[in-house]
Length: 356
Image (tube, rainbow, N blue to C red; front, side, top):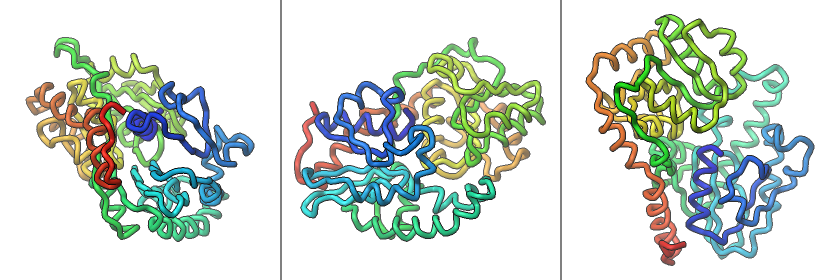
């Protein structure tokens, strides 16, 4: 249940009788709201170890998507950060795509994924990426209207697909977070998220090792063991944690460290909803949510020196938690629902009832 699934939940509220198609479905990992819908999987869901190793089946996903029979539907919405928009709707149907990002691993982050891969993956990546890019661009023509989850992603859609996109920020459950009195704020910074290379958790660990300042890292992922090895005595790598622990840490940290480039980035909004400032790399979606020198500060080069400088700049500032909470409220779930409902009504000419 990450950002893409939270968008799906909101779409389920707008379209409570809609069917859902996906490659792989793990009922134990999905919310009850989503499970109420009829869910169909492609043949990839029946392949060995698909729930754990679905990424290995990426080369088969275009074929699997094109085999889905969508002839019964007059409106199809694809939620896309991989190849989902490659479905083939019936010719009278309207296809709307909510794009979290064009496939990062073949477009803007291809080289980063390539550099962090093993020898066999590196051997296969160039021809596979070429094939997927060609297919990805061609299938953009199967979409009637694009919605991007940020201006950053809208620019990628223009660059790669030569298509314009409306912008509707994804829903954030800001009401789930609350600030605490400043007397309860503790002496540590926080990093939250999947521990993968493009999010640069190593940069945060290295910076706080050097400063000998306290950093708590929450999240699982492929870099977890490596980060534990390099973490100094002031850095606590806690792995994945339940929500109540995350909520507690958000509210009591001195600030959130966000050193990677994200398409949108829900984590900074959650931190601001908790009344805490954000120190973010000044590219990508964070530049659209964090207000520089008001709800956080930016650093513009991904180096330990630049991150340390940003931490020092934040600590010299007077920060008002109410400003962060107010800014986070602009990304509430109901705002997403209203804007997406209006977008669909404009595209279809049919008003979507607010009670749906």
